[in-house]
Image 1: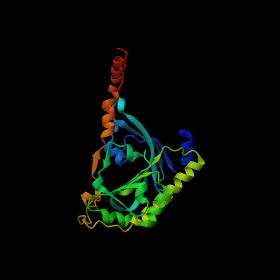
Image 2: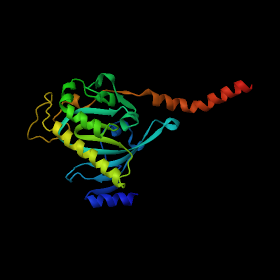
Image 3: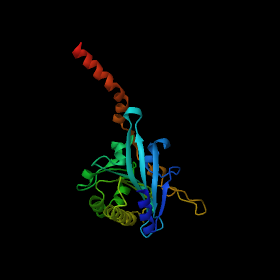
Image 4: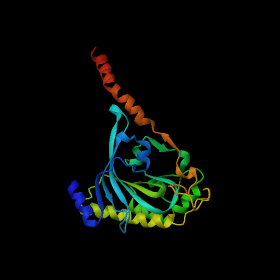
Length: 255
């Protein structure tokens, strides 16, 4: 399978690397999952192609011991022409990368958008950036998201759009075409919406200074308030007790 994936990359003029686990990929998975509990492999690098992106297969473990669960996603990074405030779009269809992580955005960070969009996506933004989010998430972009990626999780971080697909077989022609069609639509529409964005709350930059990711944004624009999801913690604690409880109940009835 890996050899077939490398052949696909060669045919399309991409670079292929089997393992980039020692590099920081970015996004919520790196922020919330310890390095030893996540892997990154099968890197497809098309950042210099006409449709620029790169992608890896990410496997990560949530929880501890008996309550731990393993998840695999195909993560994609799409470059944006300008930095924008952090916007998290979690598909309400469930099971995506942003749904299973230990921390979720708080209710205070969520905004409701027009039409049926908020019935499909849970949208979270930094406090004070609700209007800025509307500048990016215009009705035409929301239509694209509903049509192309209703079952995917997405997040804008600085000048990168992170998209989380389920594990897909990119050696299959049909799955590969669908995968690239979604990336092309998101690259086009998010690029248009973020191209002219400017964070008015950001400190002015010295033209001679070294530029880093996030320098054109205020600090508060770069993060969404989150809270710990308690049910995975409770599950991890309770799972070892289940056999004991079964034994106690069984002894009660037979004794």
